[in-house]
Length: 80
Image (cartoon, rainbow, N blue to C red):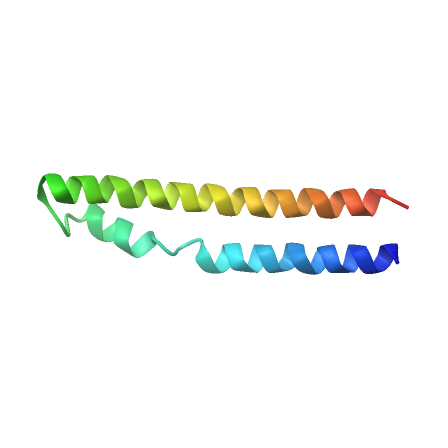
């Protein structure tokens, strides 16, 4: 039964990693466009700051999810 739990957790950790890899670049294009002044003026500056903040938050959340899943997977391997 413990092997089944480890395999299930391994599958979950791998799935989380795949989702992270798929979505890591989700806001890359809008950020690059804003860096090239795709939208200017005060509203554009605010939007640029917001989209960059959202990208940092997304990447932080993805990093934490992968790290958490890997930690939990490692903890299941320590148990008999």
